[in-house]
Image (tube, rainbow, N blue to C red; front, side, top):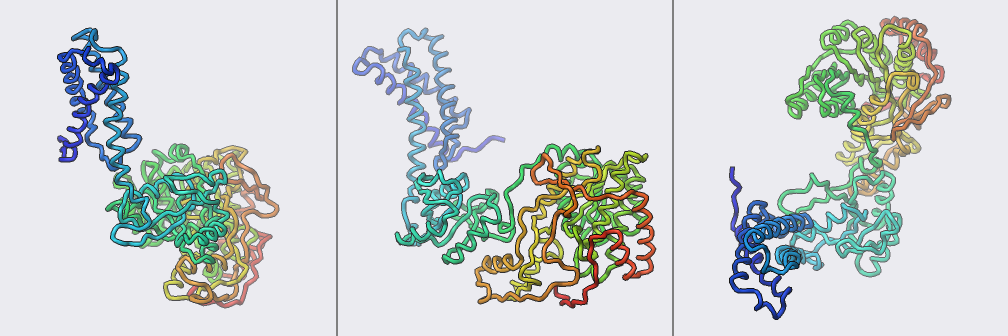
Length: 639
């Protein structure tokens, strides 16, 4: 299919041809000066005509005329340089065959190269500068007042934002200053906009600009990797200064219709709790998963569904989606079908508590890698339904692990939680026992006929997961409050579901069979814990409201089994550093597999009798550090 050339392209093409002819005459004049008469008219005409014809062919072949002058850049100058160099090279070859270059000065090609570069590139740059002149005006045409903004981050994002604004005559914002993370950049400029101070001196910078009658109305984050602590600090400073906090859209989020339509989005809770991105070995992940048959239990849940999304990108030969929830399974099955239509998949309705069904699924699907994410995780609900929680979290894990051994699965990855450390609730204790079983199997592997590599990964709260505090606060904000916090001093570790799953996959690739990792538990680096009361106040401010004025925060009291703070490591666990950023190794005490199996057989019988008191007593024996005294605290079903 031929590419169409519009009217502007024809004008640009004609311009380049004319400039090529002019460049030849100008080059001879620059070389000869007033002695230009020494060059014969016929030679001048022949040389100029030859260069022009060759240039016309080269420009058409290289598509030089297709460049949009308004967006002329270094890349365009590079394309011009290549076209000019090719034109002059062909010109020299033709003139050598024709005249042996006897009548042309030897320096002419070098002079002509410089002149032609100036005549082709100069007008393009001049046109862009003329179109970008709107950056110099404080107000947009038509009397529209631009919003004065301050940018946080003196890097590529700030440069892109300023450049995009300069290309739109009706841009909504006017950049009046930049705050840098690096002190050495203070005093420098980006496209004429000064770097006035550092991010840590935000309040001083705003005070100085206010004295100059140039107070910013917004602070816009121009980097994606600001850590949560920095963003929380800036949010507090903006609130005290009466300035709105926003974030520059990512490149894929720029709206169509031109740069004047830049849509600065609000900062969200993931920005507040996020951390700098860890460099991940995607190649190793791909090698681990590509061409394998992978099964994900709990595929319809928060962690399970994100596991499915990320695993699918690494091209497994087939993926199995297993869940007991028909609706959750339907949702992730449709998403995979739409996003990865070529990927072979099976949707399997099954409950991990049913050993025979799980064994049947494994025998039919024949997985090589299993990610076990199925679990009951809501602390108060599991506390009220003790036997069901233990049956799912402990005995369900036993069923999956046994099926992995029986059917020769290469690797099983067990998803655990920080609530397994010094647990004060049934959910945490049940997950610790699941860890123990997988640990014991992994340690026993060298002495057994089976070869399954058992990997356990432990992490804290995941933003946006089912039953987590963030969606609860969001719903309460929608209804006008109040926000409910169980204790003013409660803290939690948080991680985005995307980051958690990425690190789970990374741990799976790092956990090679052998003594170095046998029986150990991978712990994700969760960063610093966040005070829930602070999180509630910050979410209210993000909504443009004032805590305690527009939206109240009520302290409701701790719920059954709830701890004031979570721990990532037990005090007696040895902490082993890994060579991978974001991953640590815990070496908790481990029991012999025969002892664990005997205890779990007894636990199974107790659960079948639905004897809650006996279950609690048995969990206390298996997890001596647990404090599982039944709390009589009541709580609202709305949580």
